[in-house]
Amino acid sequence: MPFAHITGWGMSVPETILTNDDLSKMVDTNDEWIRDRTGIRERHIVHDEDQTTASLAVEASLKALQVANLRPTDIDLIICSTSTPEHIFPATACLVQDRIGATKAGAFDLLAACSGFIYAINMAAQSIRSRSIQNALVIGSETLSRFVNWQDRNTCILFGDGAGAFVLQASEMPGGVLSAVMHSDGSGGDLLILQGGGSKYPATEATLQAGKHFIEMDGKEVFRFATRVMAQATREVLDDSGIGLDELNWIIPHQANIRIIEAAARGLKLPLERFIVNLERYGNTSTASIPIATVEALEDGRLQPGHKIVFVGFGAGLTWGALAAEWTGPLPSERKVYPRRYRLWARIRSFLRRVVRFVEGVIWGRGS
Ligand code: UT7
Image (cartoon, rainbow, N blue to C red; front, top):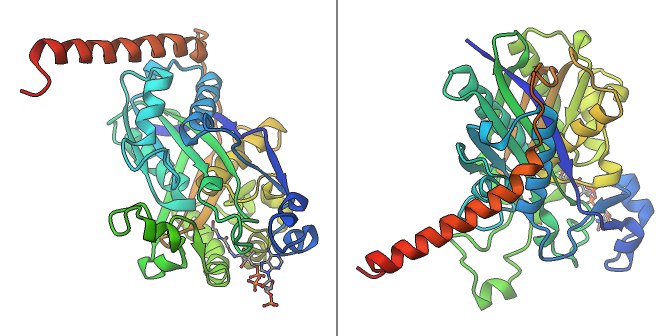
């Protein structure tokens, strides 16, 4: 059975930064409260219509392909984990597939909120392990700022925008994704919810007036749930993978609140230094937070090939989960590829396919 290795990674965040001081001019809050209660100092926010969940995902994906040294056409499967998709359908993964020119890939979105990236890597890894595919692109991308009520200080201080992407590849060499656990408890679905825009509350004047198109959260309850499950899921996945806590190099947790990560550290009796934390600069980017933290740890040299790591997260649903892996890095390859060069070709191809569809429509008749 082949192993599923993480061989490429990339991240993308919008340039615009929103600081706690900026927020204090919008709602009744202040820098000290936000830093004390969450650990967040600033977050990145999309600033024009062209910056979307798909555009951030495309940037992160091209970087990940570059690191893995794979062409977009080498990818068999794209999974985009997101709670803020470009549209309800088509899937954001399909938009990415078209824009990067991944012409041989299947593509779908996965929604497990902030735990989604863990679920998505596990799905891709299982497809590789079962020999159904060779290479997968797994993306976590969010533009939460588009769904935040900027007058609600309970939520608007927390969230940021961004994307992270991993390439997973099959190899007979042992390592890579070792095990994963996934959990849910839908009885807590109302604790963190975006009610409007789905089939229950399609957009109407009334849903707009009622604020149903904004994120709503019971922060205290989510906090209690998170502190309970983080250490628990970490222990569970370590038991499954046979890795001891003392062998573990890094825990890369969902970046929601420093107090939640501190509680997990206490629960596991590990120093906070064993956790990769960057939420002070990005806020909570939901499903993108784990890959963004991972990319930063790789770029500053903390995370190295051979390291044993655990990703652990929780979120709306309620969902939670953890995944244990041995870090690999790019697989050896003779050729050098430039994934960005495929973008122009992808655009031409996409345009031509639309033209062909139009011409076919004219020839065969659109209405018949
Ligand atoms: O990916 C999953 C996403 N969600 C989460 O991870 C959320 C988990 N929950 C949390 O992180 C925390 O519950 C929050 C950061 C949301 C809130 O922190 P808290 O320590 O639970 O605060 P609280 O809701 O108990 O509020 C304490 C006080 C209240 O005032 P009173 O009633 O004690 O006078 C709030 O009205 O702080 C007040 N408050 C604020 N003050 C200044 C609440 N939000 C703010 C604010 N600025 N932004």
